[in-house]
Amino acid sequence: MKKTVLQIFACLFALILSVSCSDGNGSDLPGISTSKHTLEATPNEFKLLSASGSTVSIAVYSDVLWGVESSEDWITPDLTSSYANGFVKLTIAPNYNLFEREGTVRIKSKQQGFSKTIEITISQKGATDDPDNPDNPDNPNYYLNATPLEMLGLPHTGGSVDLAITSNVRWRIDDLPAWISSATLSGSGDAFVKLYVEANEKNIERSATFSVTSTTAAFSRSVKIRVKQSAPTTGGETVITFEIIGFNDENWDDSGSNSDFDKTGFPENNWD
Image (tube, rainbow, N blue to C red; front, side, top):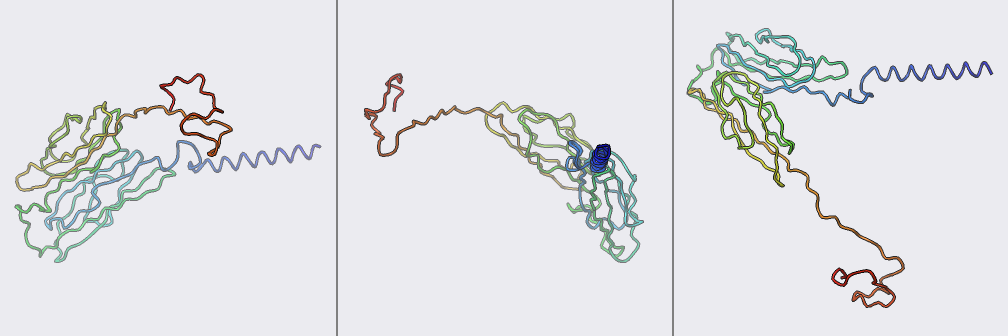
C-alpha cells in the first residue's frame, strides 16, 4: 500500500513538472499567445538616396521591446532599442564610391516568446550619378510616407487610431470626412497623428478617403488613406416556425379545407 501511494505522488509530481515546463514558453497560457503581440515598421525600403548623404525615418508600431541593427557602417540608427510605438532615424553617410550601394536595417523583437524580424532595404546612388534635381517629384532627398494606408475595421462605437507619418518635409492632412477629426492637421517631419472617429449611428457602414500632402514646394507627393467604419448591429424580424406532426404531402390540403385539421384558436386574418 505504501509503495502504491509513493507511486501516485511520483506521478503527480511528474505531471506538475511537465505543466510547469510547458507554461515556461508562454504559448500555452491564455492571454500570452505570441499572436497577440505587434511589431510592424514602415516604409520597408528607401530607393536610391542621394550620394551626398541624408537622414530618413522609420515608423515602428509595437507593444513589445525591440532592437535595431544595421548591416552597413554607412547606415547609422539613432538608437539601438526601444519599446512600443516610436521612430528610428537613420543617418546615411555620403557615398564617395563610383557605384550605388545597398544595405539593410533590421527591427527585431526582444520579447520573450515572440520572435519577429523586419528588414528595411536602403539603396544609395554612386558618386558618379547625375546630381539630384530638386524639381523632380521623386527627388530622393525628400520623402513622405504614412501608415496604415487602409483603416477598414473601425468599430461603429468610434474611438481613436494613430496615423504614423514619416517625413523630412512639411505636410498637411486634407479631406478628412466629417466623422473623423484631429487636433493635428499639419506639421513637418515625423509624427504620430491621433485621429478621433465618431460613433456611427446610421444603419449602414460608411467609408471615405483622405490624404497626407507635402507642402514643401520642391517636393510634390500625396499619400491616400482609405477608412471604413462598420454599422451598428441591428436586429431583424423574428421568424417563428412550427411543425405539424402527423401530416405528410399526400394528406395536406393547401386550401386549408382539410377536415382532419382543427384551426380552432387561429384568427381568420392570421391564417394562410
